[in-house]
Image (cartoon, rainbow over all chains, first blue to last red; front, side, top):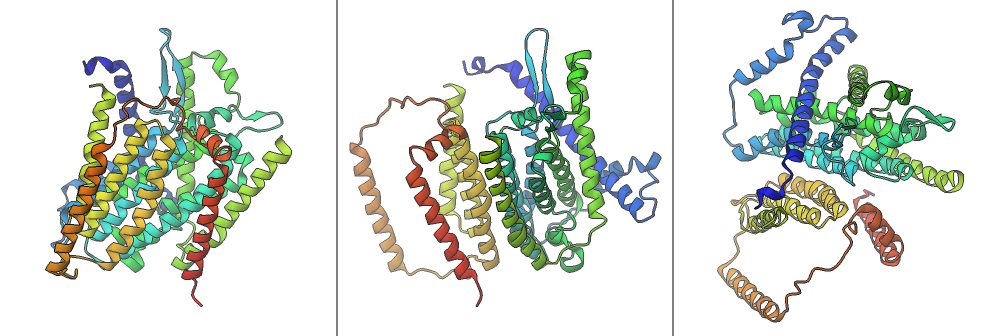
Length: 356
Length: 165
């Protein structure tokens, strides 16, 4: 009787959606590695990958095959179970956050069935992302410790303290945004940013919370371990940090998880601050095409915005040099957290005295 | 057995297994990891009760922040069986006896309790964040503010201890 109580069509619909989203995130992440090398090459006046396929487009696949065929080395004194658990956790948490991102408006079929382009519209959407992010640091910590290497341990300690420090400022900057939206559900936050211009002001949250956006962006850089905050893997001081002892596809998982994270966090940044799948004149477009085509356009708009965000992350990486460790901690605790608190107070004051 | 009960049993097995792992494993790092597993299972129970906010805060605060600091300290201390001080036989014996007495007291206490099997009639949205906020800032506003002052004093204390002079 257990099987009868489950709505199978619902499960199949969600399974298809999850597979498509996972496939898309992995695909985007694969080509983000290619894009990163091309951007780096362009900024340094080089050619970048150009041998495998046209414009080097087959390079990520060649890299993947290479990593699979490399020799697997597990250090003798390493804790084998945790050594393997580390990269697996990194990859798992990277993929998990995509579950709450609304990729497009719901499609209503002629039979009356509504298909949501979001795996789960949960009440606590954005907190779920925070939960996944805070668990993600275990991948790096366990990997670094299990390698039984001082440099790896230093790298993982740096990663953990950096992640915890910047999570605070990130959370507080987000509280200001949530005070304006009054909800934690990402689908609802996107709906509130409908269109582009309404009542004499932009609907997108970046125009309502500019300071909050900047704080959130800086913290996102730190959470992603990307330059200028890539201290956990500072190759000049720590010999690559937490993944020194890793080889073959386990190393590949760590590096690849960072690109999956890059894609997902860009999508979340766009969802929170740049209107998600909304675009100017969307009501006029919705009136002239069928619902399915409209949803497809919305998904494309979200993808375009996300890829622009990823490119922005890449430009910063190849422009700004790495922080020193004390500078990183001072920026996090003494600048960003007070700034985020002030932003929260200003937002509260405006909501009470101006908007009411 | 409906899916709800099935999930309940799976989560309970994970929670109790994880809790046993915490106290039975020799390696302190493994203990911390088992504790994290237990926290996740408890969060799963919260979700079954539709207390989504509590579930996710449990993961963010306990599994995500506090346990990372625990792990951090244990990893840097590099504890293992060789450096751990061995307790004397007398101490172990005393531990067994006092633990056994505690078990007897608990058993006696639980034996006479009546199991209240009728579920409390609560609305299904009671654990959602808006309901929780309403309750915290109206009915329980005084304890809420008191506990925030407690946290503030703990924070000031931590800063004072951590400050080099």
